[in-house]
Amino acid sequence: MFVDGAWRITVVGKDADFEQRAVVRTPYGVLVLAGAVGESLVVDADTWELRLEHLWPGRGWRPDVEVVPGPVTGTGGRRSREVRATDCYWPGQPRPVLPHNLVLRLDAFGAEEPVARPVRTVREAITPAGTPLIRTSSGPQVEAVDSKSTAGRAGW
Image 1 (cartoon, rainbow, N blue to C red):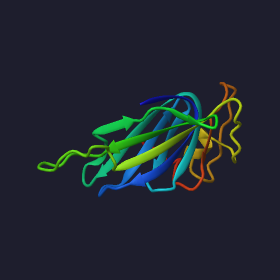
Image 2 (tube, one colour; image 1 turned 135 degrees about the vertical axis):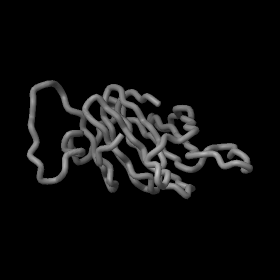
Image 3 (spheres, rainbow, N blue to C red; image 1 turned 120 degrees about the vertical axis):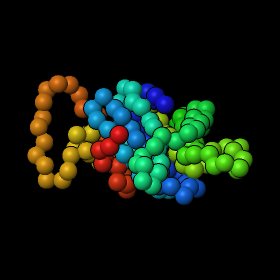
């Protein structure tokens, strides 16, 4: 799914046998958010893509078979939405009414709501520690942060 603007992604639910993750592709790089409850990541880009995946043993990371973005809702001037995913369907088991293997909450940051957080660029987030960074004048860099997660591991 494609998303516009700055949003904080938070894992609010996980009920799955497989390891889960959210993969964010921005014009400036790829970020990975571990699918454990409480993990969070801020993405600040004009447009970016969110993919939800699960780790199939012996086969690697696979896209979830169903991703259901909920409506954008607003309370107190803040916009948010829930995104739910099902990693796979099992023969003989009914499909869940509402996907629940991985549940994310996206909270928007508008112009009137500055993003107050420690700042790292996407390049810093995906570069191994101790690796010197090369700065260029090719344009603005996206600010992203992994508050508690392993986000920032490159992978797509």
